[in-house]
Image 1 (tube, rainbow, N blue to C red):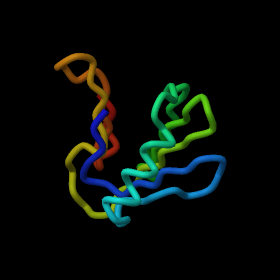
Image 2 (image 1 turned 120 degrees about the vertical axis):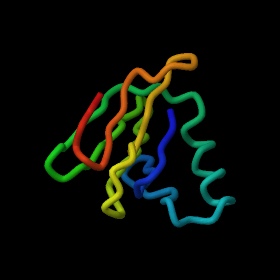
Image 3 (image 1 turned 180 degrees about the horizontal axis):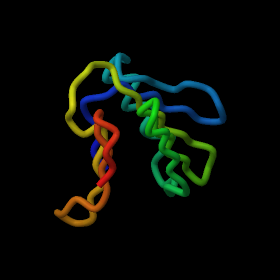
Image 4 (image 1 turned 90 degrees about the horizontal axis):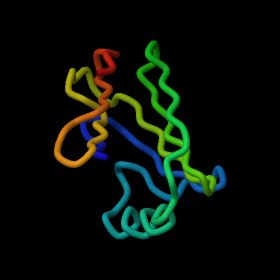
Length: 93
């Protein structure tokens, strides 16, 4: 999965571990908490352009726009092809 062109927050058990403005070190430590977690649900609010990715061990990734860019906020890949994406224009493909 690729997350780009948006703001994001990583949470574990409702506590923020890192956000898009965090240091690389803090982000890498936060990502370790997600290692092995399985994506269990995706909730999309098209009006507010918010997405919540829920993982099986209480991890959450929240994405939201930080500019008026129309680029994709996130893209999920299977092998080398895109299977699901969501952009700043509210279009899901």
